[in-house]
Length: 593
Image 1 (cartoon, rainbow, N blue to C red):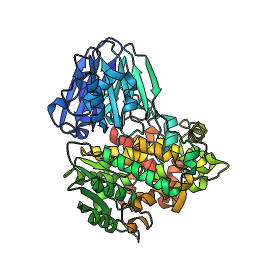
Image 2 (cartoon, helix red, strand yellow; image 1 turned 120 degrees about the horizontal axis):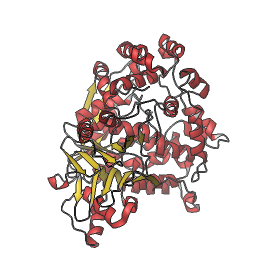
Image 3 (tube, helix red, strand yellow; image 1 turned 45 degrees about the horizontal axis):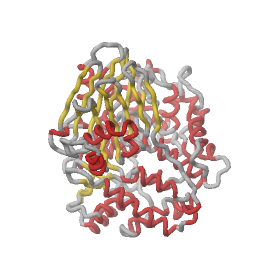
Image 4 (cartoon, one colour; image 1 turned 120 degrees about the vertical axis):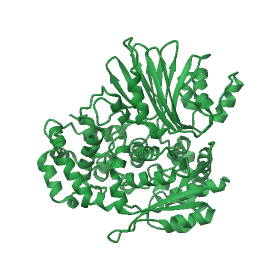
């Protein structure tokens, strides 16, 4: 995993190499093992490297093949690159490196843009053709790897992080009213292509963007998620699905062991991460390192699951590290986590994940992680509510949305409001072909949008702040497609994720499965108290906030008078949402007019 950046000019001018250097520098933590720049004509590309596959300098980027006239900058990991290499060698291609980057470059030459359909992995890339001047941007199916872009006078820039584009300069930092509506409705999720800034967009998962030398652009979606209902799938028993699923999970975990450095695992003590650890051990990983983070107990709320993680670690003989973080350290280092956010993210997990990643990076460069199981296999409480629903859009919004449209209008200052974009977005996604069951409609939306721009983005941002690569086997696209075939009733069984839990019973101790799901909020963020409340108050009452004028003052005042009384349906703080956005805008220096 790495950081990529570039500038493509359409006006005959030379690229701004100083701006490219600033983008590379901002993305330094994503790739602490090397950097490079390639400039040719009206195009310039930058790269920061994290050495995971092929540790030699032969895999250095930007990578350009003069014989083919093609170059690439690439962020991610393609797990089936050895198989693709063999296929390409059979077609006469010769390789000078041993990693995945050169495979992508030559696969593009051999098969054109459709090469992405052969990839299994997480990726964001820019490929350029020397002779035509064409540039192709691409992003993986589930959006595990980020890719932002921004038009600038006479050209276009792209980068792995939004702050890198801000550092390059020339970006329109007006607040996008549609994005603000999404942010305030979906607990900070802003779906692609929007971002909070009007002048920055992000490439949607599973899409390609072609940029011609004259500046014309075109896009293509190469993957969509469908929920077919074949007769044989409906007829297959719960027990049969459990076996099929377990085979799919084994394949996904084994794929993510492809690396030239040891692969560890994040072990929360829950079913999902425990199953991954068990399957890694089953695959024969020697000296498997596992990591668990926990916090202080507060007000009767348990702050860790150390005992469950240690049950799993003992069962599989892992080299286990338990990381305890006092609340004082969480709060003191919260500004660093805000700095690491490519977009504003309100989840309490951000600071914990940030500090966990720091500790893990001292011993491991790659870990497998359990994100995505709840969205893919039906683990959230709103899915049963949708089972058989006659009004799935309304029922989903009632359970998931932070504010209805009336409250949103009372939140946002006059002149800053948009239409009811969040409701329209859900309605559009639910109406799309490929999912008929209301539960499947919600699963698809959560898997392809809400997951991508919340837990997955959080994992990328917080791990890459310390040059740590996180791999997510539950988001293997073949596994996700398999899960989409499983009837919803099998996912909703046993209180949610039924078929996954039964698969896990064949691998991990039952005491890890038969217990309540744990979730450890940071009390100061959940209830807004102490130094965090003061920081939020300062942000929202600052001169910068007043000049920005995003929110109605009477609404802000009401939240500040009683922070604990204003909680979203998913138990988030409405004040924290507003305060975190303003804090993020001030941290990253965008005008946000």
